[in-house]
Image (tube, rainbow, N blue to C red):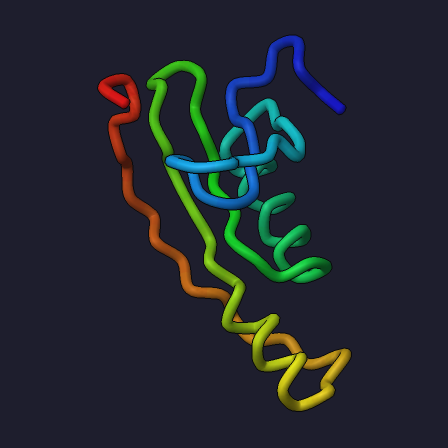
Length: 93
C-alpha cells in the first residue's frame, strides 16, 4: 500500500456510487500497469484518479471478461478489457 507521495489512486466500481479504493501508484505508467493486472485477476470496473488534477485519468471495464468466464467456464482465457482513456472533471461532483 502506497499513500505518501502517491498521485494516482486505483478504485473499483463506479465513481458516482460505491467506489472502493484498491491501491495507489507514484506515476501514471505504474498505476495503469497495476490496474491492468488487477482487472485480469478480478474482472470488473476500475478507474485511476489523479490527486493533482482531481479527475479520472483512465478506466477499464473488464466486467465483460467476467461474464464471458462465467458463461463459458473458462479460467485462463484473457480478453482485452475495454479502455476508455478520457478525463472527467470530478471537482464539480
